[in-house]
Image (tube, rainbow, N blue to C red; front, side, top):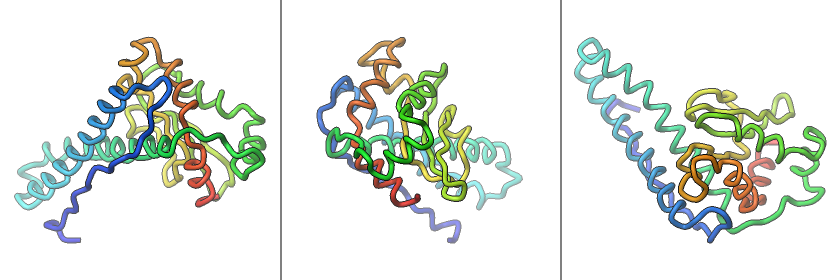
Length: 201
């Protein structure tokens, strides 16, 4: 790809149902924040091309700051796409004795939800994320602080839980992260998550 051929990303549209414990207004504002990540990433990507054409020595400091910011905006964009897709189609339960259910039972002994909730309830903004390692044939769950740090590199995302304050403060207040996480699990469409797992396991 030539420097002049930067592809702009387009914000996705999500078909989201009315949710329990996550208000329409909160979703509306959250979608707006996601769209901001898409816009900002596109702006940074195009600015980097402009600076590079002018010469890296001239714009070394600006280039460095934009490069650092680029992954933050990209990860914010992509993780929110994983996040909102998990609610499309409405809440559906995890398939009993399905492949994902069996994998959870083997690795988490029936306590997967509690484990991810504990990660999500850690202090600080970020994401509680479940990945699957096709090489090791096992899950990896972790906390990505500020969304661009702490990732398991190359591993596909199976489930993404946003625990930045913007995800819950409107509905549950500054101390309502736990209530929001409970609502998150109530509203999940597990068939979406099962499909992600089936594609990589």
